[in-house]
Length: 99
Image (cartoon, rainbow, N blue to C red; front, side, top):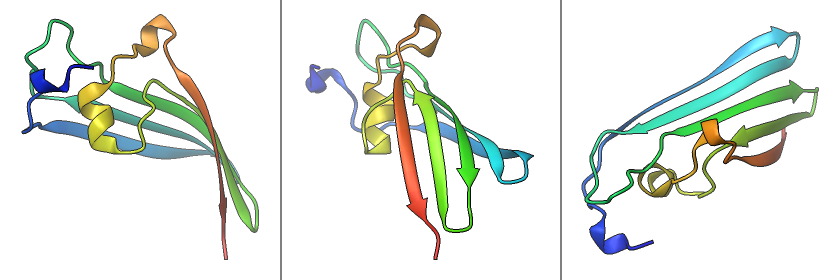
């Protein structure tokens, strides 16, 4: 990635949500759209994540598919080149403990 062609001041919109389906099972989703046009031939793609969440008395389990891979959200917003519609996505799994 040629980072010198990317702008340092970027604006974007993000939305995420959780829809409870049955009891402790939910559908989770997230969408991020970069609003700033970069000085590149190919512009970054929007971020999309879809998943399933199951909660127990002590844990929450999430499995999801997303078209972005960075831990830092700002890097995903500006550098993502994966297109969910073309099958360019990754799988993830989270476990959290509830006290």
